[in-house]
Image (tube, rainbow, N blue to C red):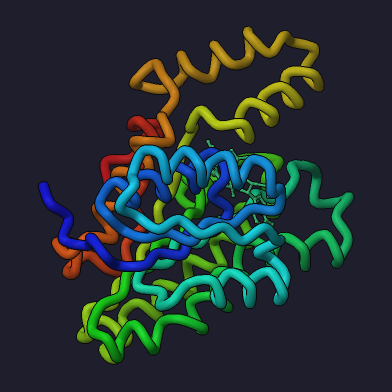
Length: 262
Ligand code: NAP
């Protein structure tokens, strides 16, 4: 299926690795020019080289910086001639007990997983409406549907973003101008973050990484982890010309782990 978005420009935040990279790859495969960001320049340039080699017709620009800062966001926006597609992503907040978290800890989580996406939406959405095309995908978490114990910062900040988006995406001045805003909710995907979180949890529980990794895999109905390419494919579809009637949705990709009927 031709997704009908070749030649568009996408800003894909936090995309040198993992789910963000999966999204940037799937969009580039559709002929979308991409601006990708991450804090670490080395991995970012390696990903950009990989994309340029695989998709020579596509322009790939890099912006090394922290997307949760004003300067990082300004640099990312400046590198993108026009943002037709925005994929919001950033690292997830740390695990822990809420009794140990200070106000500053909370503010940092809100900055990364709620306020940064809102700032980037604010900077881009009205111009999208003027051009009668816009696609925004926020990478959140399955924890929005089914909170993870110990990940209260993530549960709270992402639920805040989800509530905000639920209202904004339904504004007729956006929805009637072919601007969609959706959240993509990953369950367990095989990325560096999931591996390092699993290693830390296993350590605390006195188990080996291999044992903890296998036990989580076996707990999923699919008996496997998701692949970032699968996540990217869903993101690209939500950004496609065909998905203009899909907005304000929370799309769960968790291999069927959420045990509800709907
Ligand atoms: P990952 O494999 O660790 O990749 C994270 C990417 O984001 C890297 O490119 C990283 O590069 C970049 N990044 C992190 N913080 C950044 C910042 N402040 N500014 C710019 N770039 C930043 O992680 P992932 O598994 O893809 O996770 C992506 C998001 O999905 C996270 O918020 C995570 O909590 C959420 N999530 C993941 C899963 C899962 O199973 N993987 C499940 C639920 C939710 P640098 O470190 O160089 O900046």
